[in-house]
Length: 384
Ligand code: HEM
Image (cartoon, rainbow, N blue to C red; front, top):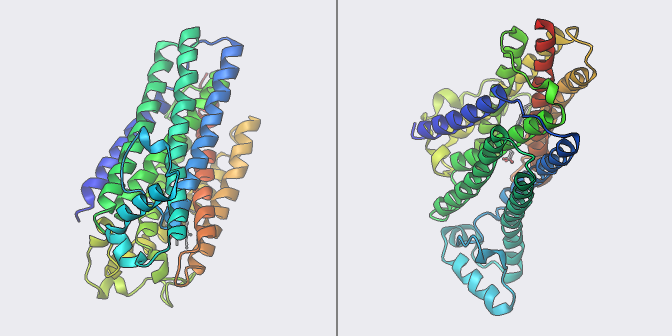
């Protein structure tokens, strides 16, 4: 149960931040021009974060994440430029456990490929830093940003920086073994996706200032929040499924190797050692995490269906209707992609489906936040 403190910390941090943002979401008065420019800037931020998560997924699925063995926030922007520098970088990687255990004899050209993904992931993170900070400074100088909004962007920037620092912590821990510990991968993923949710909400708040008033009295609003929380839990579980390569243990659906409830849950020794240390021997952990991920997925599909039927007649707001109609479609699509991923886990994790599944999770977050945002406007209108 060593993983429990990690779970607790990640969840407290993410939900505290999300709820604070959502609950105090009003943005001060801005001119129409300022709204348009700041809104577009935030929207570009959403697209860039989406892209970064996809690149991160490819980095993990191609087992490239430990290829850069040092942390040089400024100098690291320049990749190796000649054969001598490449060889020096490769020599550093050769000292590491991952090379010695699974990549012994790798060619320099193969190393360059895995290096590329990790480099690109780090490069994009730095690039996003510029895209966020420089226009932000400009908006402050123009006087477009009030104190409240300044604080919100401050949280965003600190949060982004924290994800970068956490990324390095997980690589540093990963370099002491064969792979990055699953729980760290998962925390990194959930921090990134909660930043994505926060950004979407902020973007909507800027574009549509009259919508952003929270009223959490309605049971429908509570159900929407419950779905959001469960979705984050599901993403957290999914990150561990990926980190443990648990898909390989049960590449069948709807059963799990012929059983609906896998007997290994009762016959194997219960341990979560594989959550914290990548450990291919932890069969109970692999069984448990895949079973929990499937079970949570089915619960999510049911809750979204309930939400759909409970709220489809509460408003004629066309944006709410759009989000509501997309909600069941996206959750079902995501479940189908998950099933395709698991069915293709035949000795090797399928990169294509793995990345698609990650993208699907982000779409689902986007739709959930969109629905919550417009739902709040509805509750506000009903009460007024
Ligand atoms: C409907 C809600 C679902 C959500 C939101 C969701 C989300 C996720 C996320 C975020 C990951 C981690 C991706 C990564 O780190 O690359 C993941 C991994 C995974 N999920 Fe799901 N999932 C859902 C349903 C399912 C279903 C129904 C199945 C199969 C029955 C499934 C099977 C898998 C597998 C096998 C992986 C590991 C893939 C890998 O190793 O990269 N998921 N899921």
